[in-house]
Image (cartoon, rainbow, N blue to C red; front, side):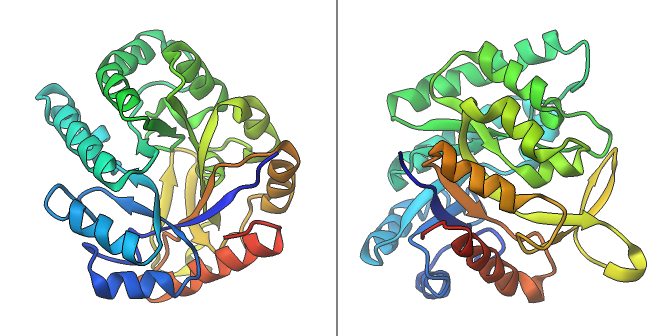
Length: 284
């Protein structure tokens, strides 16, 4: 049985990757970094980023393809979303990562979603096929939506989507905090529903937003309410129980820490998250 691998998300820690960014990322003491397409790396700097990572003994846990591309229906209709994903896949190939994070299953997460699931699969099938040829797995992140228009808000629905997709290189990027924000119990319920389809994980935490307590902070907003992120282990997600279960179940994929907090406390939040996972038995 394997063990989880620790990663950190570079989106809020760095811009387009250069030598200065590498130095900063290495301060966190992890060997795996999740990069964001067009935010940290693109077609123009991918080869240079790969050289920098290799020379500093770092690996790319996943390439994240950004959320907003999927929620803009005009980009779906005019084909620019597909082009975005094709370009991301070419960068993932250069970086030699095995995971590419995708989003955007718009629709009703509760009922009457068969057509929407079929449309999503049709849109993503060519990308999944091309990814398979490069030995890359697409991991669909469960997400929330301010109007509730996201199929992956519910564990049963995202499981149904992945089962119907029926590809061994199309799995779930399990984000426990996103489920909580969407009003779904992350653990034990959601984990129990989707565990056989988990290919990657995001680790962040949050509590219900209280203006008097939190002030002006980045918010995670769903139809169910507003949440403010905290370091992993300091919010409302039962990470202690979940990590214990992951270790017992032999999960050997990535746990990638992301902050989603005010800029001035990003580094502190990531360090607290990695320290917490270390105390839970996750080794970098």
